[in-house]
Length: 191
Image 1 (tube, helix red, strand yellow):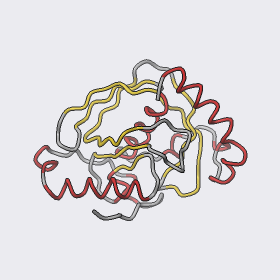
Image 2 (cartoon, one colour):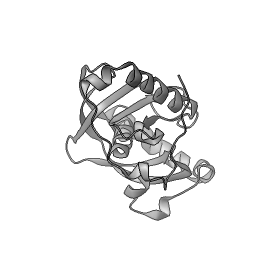
Image 3 (tube, one colour):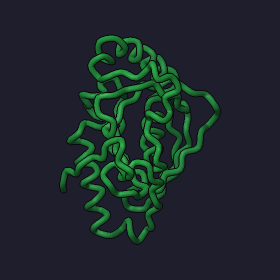
Image 4 (cartoon, one colour):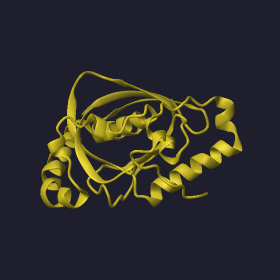
């Protein structure tokens, strides 16, 4: 396994639409090694998720995991999940305000409106089908990562630029209010 460099905002790769992966390609040792690298890079950077395109591979794969994450101590745990060729479909039109950061946009956070409930179809890393409905902060994380596969960065979805904040100022002035809101959402709809 190897820790890879993470593309930063402004690099053209982040604005591409990633291509779908075939089953044969997914089964190859090189692709399985790439997925291991994606996970290791995400964990090394303390990310809640990482899309392949963020490590310069414009393919429709992302890794998601929240487990004792120092960047997101308020997020409910999400077991390691690999989504290959994911398709997200909102279930209903209810949304919530999610304060997001990104490994490709260092030291910046902003408020993004995300769907509360999502139907997810994808493959896992071995090509087995995934079909589930996710809710709340987990749904927000899925939307953030799949946006990357379409060339969209969270800053594109921030409706009010006055919500932009550095990590330090988020911790000082905004974290408590966001955690209160997030805790209420989790209590109401689950992760």
